[in-house]
Image (tube, rainbow, N blue to C red; front, top):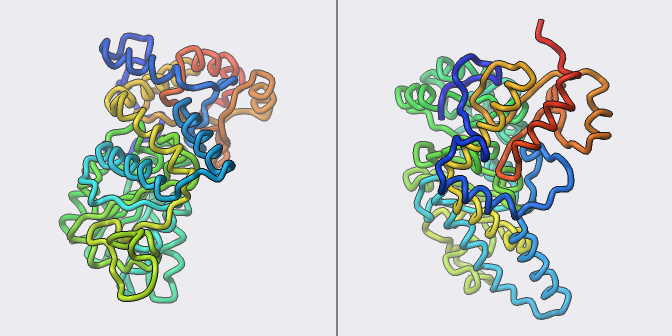
Length: 380
């Protein structure tokens, strides 16, 4: 990932949405096929809040719910879609599947890391980061753990020999700024500091190599287009023994269906020891969605999403950026204009946040420009 940059940073943007010619023929065909699976009846620019399900996920979930209602469901069969989701996610973030644990919420995995920190540790984070990244570490104050905040752009420079861990979102939820992972990694290598990277707002549109970090976490219900109740945690082999699997249950066992009663403790040897018992139906819907993204491929997803964001920025007079998330200040009348025009986005940190993904078309972007341009508050 590149430098910490805000949405109005100067520079040439990635260009090329689906129809603009910025993709090669194969990438364009895959995106056309993928986008045909979405059924939004509005201009939906809110993936950063929750992603839309592709048709294949919806169908799989309805089939599973029908089996549940009929009494014909086999609980053990839910292992298959979860295993598929785990394996494809590992491919998306460039790690071996043995490094991936699954659960329901990102904060659960942040909590595992937080409770395993030595007493008196210093955790460095970005000012205003998402609280699921912050609160698990702040909750360790009774053990002398301190959480120090600095502006995102100064994060790498703020790493010192006293910093035990940097906990930060790769893409900031509020405004889409990207952390300078290269500089941060170099700084942490010099001090022996480990990195906990929340990639919830990145994986699904941005290239992420999770093998570069001690820990990463990702909620699945945003850019991965999965139901809520799905999350992934990656941990390198050299860091596993330093974590206490304090949420371990039967699903963290070496053989989950054969280790559901009694002692001794017999957890999986790999990252599965950190698994949290799955919300079955969420994973039924997750596997087809993540597979769809893998079929399109991260390079095409990235170029498409950033290209559409660039189209929107240009259309409202913003300077170029590098993110699929755009944050703008709008006047009070914008909310009614969006409602009447059947357009959905979110307000975060006092600004309108729009996000562009595989389900978004250039027509959606043109519509958003027409609706919002009269309501944009100029920068002073």
